[in-house]
Image 1: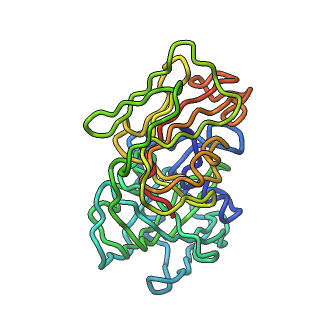
Image 2 (image 1 turned 90 degrees about the vertical axis):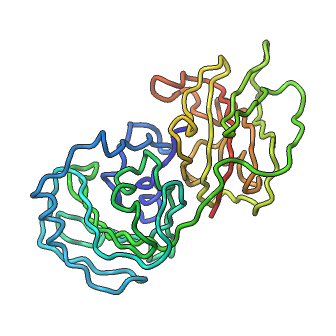
Length: 315
């Protein structure tokens, strides 16, 4: 599933350029989606000069509120770089936790404030250990809630953006859907689960793609109802009708978080109204997926899509 990564959500929230620029890279896709981000191992390494530039940033303000960043402009880095500014005192951050954070961003070119999640009280979440956010996982793993992290990275325009990130919450989430099994309608693709909960999808011979969205609950969770303006943490597998699996968070080993305002319409419409803890089978007509454009080399134009989604959390 291609969706807006943290930087894309931030851009929507703040109307600014990439606030976590080093955590993602666009693929030239439509406004409805962006590519998953590169892992830290794929990204270029920060130099001693990059670290020195970040360490020259002065942070004013107490934890719990938006700080002020001051530095001599222009500030430029050649690669993403992080530095722990304050240790937290809350729960220890462990892999697989849903981490919620606030952050403020400044333009490196002129040291001007670019935007802030504090401003609109719109904290963002991600799963610690999600390969899309390795650049945050490495410095935060083993820290505690309340930790504050300085981050700087190149943005899409060739400049540098500087952030102060504060972890405001972290919680453990289930590793799979949990709830009451639901008997699906006849004739739909069938789903079988292994011992870990990872799904395998089988499309019946002769199955014809629907002209309207199919959203079949397979497991009914007892959590709150998901709304289309929320950020959802999920495990999922996506495939074409010919059986080709083109994406799977299960294969990456970690659930992923995304805004339902930043995914294909079939996801927004199919998951809104479901309950947290549920597993949902989505059969998505091309018009509610990637349409005539398709997506890269993995999803041909005019392709119906099949997903199995475990909704693990929503906020």
